[in-house]
Length: 67
Image 1 (cartoon, rainbow, N blue to C red):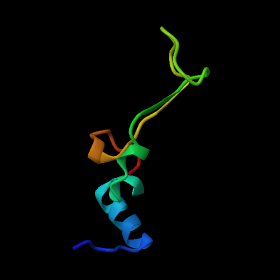
Image 2 (image 1 turned 180 degrees about the vertical axis):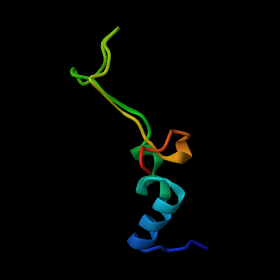
Image 3 (image 1 turned 135 degrees about the vertical axis):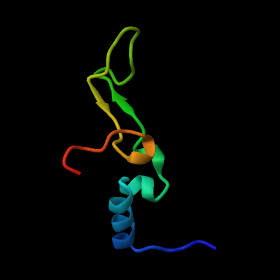
Protein backbone atom coordinates (compact mmCIF):
# COMPACT_ATOMS: atom_id res chain seq x y z
CA UNK A 1 0.00 0.00 0.00
CA UNK A 2 1.45 3.35 -1.01
CA UNK A 3 0.90 6.48 1.00
CA UNK A 4 0.05 9.65 -0.92
CA UNK A 5 1.44 12.84 0.62
CA UNK A 6 0.70 16.44 -0.26
CA UNK A 7 3.46 18.78 -1.36
CA UNK A 8 3.23 20.47 2.04
CA UNK A 9 3.73 17.11 3.79
CA UNK A 10 6.75 16.26 1.61
CA UNK A 11 8.29 19.68 2.35
CA UNK A 12 7.65 19.33 6.08
CA UNK A 13 9.16 15.81 6.16
CA UNK A 14 12.18 16.97 4.13
CA UNK A 15 12.81 19.81 6.57
CA UNK A 16 12.30 17.58 9.62
CA UNK A 17 14.75 14.91 8.38
CA UNK A 18 17.29 17.28 6.74
CA UNK A 19 16.73 16.05 3.19
CA UNK A 20 15.97 17.70 -0.13
CA UNK A 21 12.51 17.30 -1.59
CA UNK A 22 13.99 14.97 -4.22
CA UNK A 23 15.50 12.73 -1.56
CA UNK A 24 12.27 12.72 0.41
CA UNK A 25 10.40 11.53 -2.68
CA UNK A 26 13.07 8.94 -3.52
CA UNK A 27 14.42 10.73 -6.61
CA UNK A 28 18.08 10.63 -5.57
CA UNK A 29 19.34 10.85 -9.15
CA UNK A 30 18.48 14.57 -9.11
CA UNK A 31 20.71 15.36 -6.15
CA UNK A 32 23.72 13.08 -6.57
CA UNK A 33 27.05 14.77 -7.30
CA UNK A 34 27.14 16.38 -10.71
CA UNK A 35 30.17 17.87 -12.44
CA UNK A 36 29.80 20.47 -15.19
CA UNK A 37 32.53 20.82 -17.80
CA UNK A 38 33.04 23.75 -20.18
CA UNK A 39 33.32 21.36 -23.11
CA UNK A 40 30.21 19.37 -22.17
CA UNK A 41 32.26 16.19 -21.81
CA UNK A 42 35.53 15.98 -19.91
CA UNK A 43 38.80 15.72 -21.79
CA UNK A 44 41.71 13.87 -20.15
CA UNK A 45 42.99 16.02 -17.31
CA UNK A 46 40.15 18.57 -17.61
CA UNK A 47 38.72 19.68 -14.29
CA UNK A 48 35.06 20.59 -13.85
CA UNK A 49 34.06 24.24 -14.04
CA UNK A 50 31.33 23.65 -11.47
CA UNK A 51 30.58 20.76 -9.11
CA UNK A 52 27.15 20.36 -7.55
CA UNK A 53 27.03 18.32 -4.36
CA UNK A 54 23.97 17.32 -2.41
CA UNK A 55 23.88 18.49 1.20
CA UNK A 56 21.22 15.99 2.32
CA UNK A 57 22.01 14.16 5.53
CA UNK A 58 20.91 10.96 3.81
CA UNK A 59 24.05 11.33 1.65
CA UNK A 60 26.24 11.85 4.73
CA UNK A 61 27.13 15.38 3.71
CA UNK A 62 27.45 18.08 6.35
CA UNK A 63 24.36 20.21 6.84
CA UNK A 64 24.55 23.80 5.60
CA UNK A 65 25.59 26.42 8.15
CA UNK A 66 22.80 27.85 10.24
CA UNK A 67 20.50 24.84 9.91
